[in-house]
Image (cartoon, rainbow, N blue to C red; front, side, top):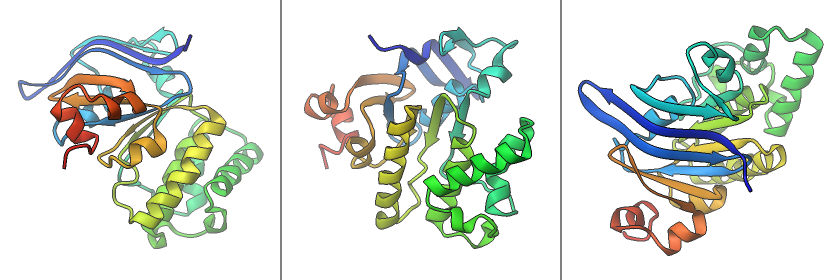
Length: 241
């Protein structure tokens, strides 16, 4: 029986008087890679922000690794997770300093920090760029650095909000392969937002489909493609063109 990495129940969130999220139940199992899909405005990014404790819902309960999030423990629980966005949002400094930033803030010793930074730059194939300025990186290189910056923190849960969307196909395919190998090896519980139906079977074990802030279907990748709950799910899975 799987252990849940993230659970949420009865999540409601409004913005400007409009209901953005109305999620009865959500579960990300330990060590799985889940895709989160839905049309623009369906609430995907907001759900990621709520689950990663970057945004507080109006009501509901979130449990991270069996511990319910409260105002008192929220900062500590956030440190067990990492978020990567579509835009790399890198600091205007070297690649090395970008990846080291989180470790510095957490007070890691210089020798340990150097070892971990270089390990993750190497695993993502950008160690040769350690002393380079982020100003001169390609899109693929920048996103690899962004991933390294998240993974160097050794998070228990990783949230990715369309991290490959802006990349060309060859760059995206190469990064898919490297990223999938890393996640499988580290067993980090991962939720990835995507608009690309071809990304789903390449990366995800399970899929959650959002429509107007509600979960329409949460299923294994195979079952969702074979038995979409409705035409909306079929469309999002790429079965209807």
